[in-house]
Image 1 (cartoon, rainbow, N blue to C red):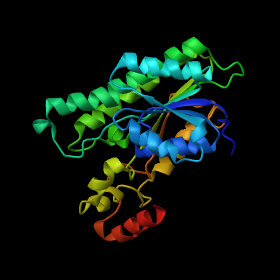
Image 2 (cartoon, helix red, strand yellow):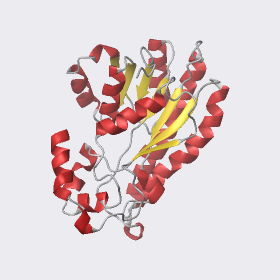
Image 3 (spheres, rainbow, N blue to C red):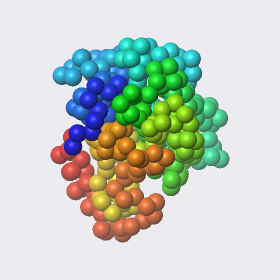
Length: 283
């Protein structure tokens, strides 16, 4: 399917992470022009980009998502380079792997998670919308698109990670507000959330290696497999598309194997070895 993304300029925040890199690769396949954002891992991102066959389609932007002025500046640089920005994948985020129930939760950790995951999403989206206002909408009517990377933790909660779940929950209120605001800047502009469940990334890999974690996760899913980053990236590309998803706005696409937030399988029904074997074969 032609997603209509060829030559469209897309900003991806948190492009140095597993999902971010996968989104970049998928969008590059579609012919998009990319602005890949990183901060502390920006140099690693640059080295990774240099190894890609499509490296001529992308540039690197370095900024701290917690800094609203910095995010506005990199968006404006990107807009000036491409003439206008057509899409923004708001993907930067952190997930502290240690379980900390609220009764023991450190204020510093809460502030760090909310600053990056929620406030960082605000400043990234605001920077994009200001660039959209400066550049104007696509004259051909292919509306601008913002996609937030959410999490099933926002829908079902996540014990020991209330800070993360709360930070992702905030994206829904933001998305549902911005879907009504973006049309003042672009009458065909759209804003949505793609909500991954457990996905194998560098951020979750160590946690998934702990005994019993994979078994516990897949017991809540009718499809007994964990998501790969490509699964999430292709869903984001579809939602971003001005052709395939042109009438989709204010919605949440959950990519989590049918996860319901409750136990669907008895322990004896879960073949963890098969799940892990499939993970290795997909790598």
